[in-house]
Length: 273
Image (cartoon, rainbow, N blue to C red; front, side, top):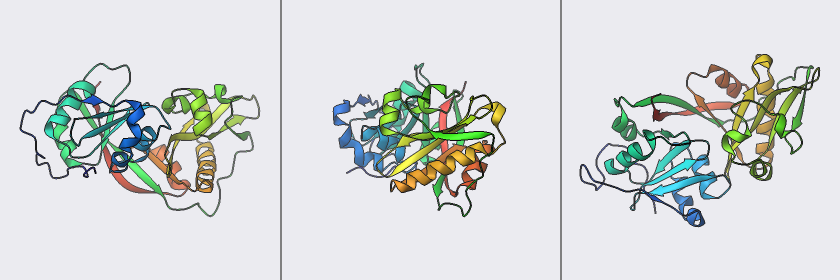
């Protein structure tokens, strides 16, 4: 049984300066950490996607009750009883080390945020999380110059940008098997215009990622595709999930247009580069 994340900043059984060595868990044992994933108070879907084997990621423990989940996309979450020694090991091994994959520790704990606050090598930002409150009365109207289709093996190679399926899925086949999405193309020239897809998938939730090509922005494509995603997620009996950096006003506008409401603000801790 994993305790909830420490909130009050008090040491939970470790001595100051305690040395902890993180242990990487073999992926054959990931299902044993489903409960810990469910106890991540900042976000459950990314840890759950790892623990259930739907998406690639790593799990580490401090040998006691602390658990670190590191998703393929770079998002990281912690669960359990968190000690200063555990946080220092994360700092040295992940936050300031030179890894081939980015590491963004996302937390709703003031204890964790305070522990890392004021460090020259780190940057702390805010991330707004949303819960879906229901489909809006009217669906967004698609610009007549575009066509929407589901993502398939035939068209996935046409998708361009940063927040696209390859952002959070290691290989195309994994996304096509366990994820889904919609893309918009220009009727005039057939060029890729926008995409909305399952950035993370768990047994209960689907997180939505959205990208619009720069030349097609401000034409309502993101809202149209996000609407289709929400509709399909609800049809699957799951909950749509949305989150974005606090400064991303475009993403906020899209979220509100398809029935999302802000539910919490997390802190993102990452290397200051």
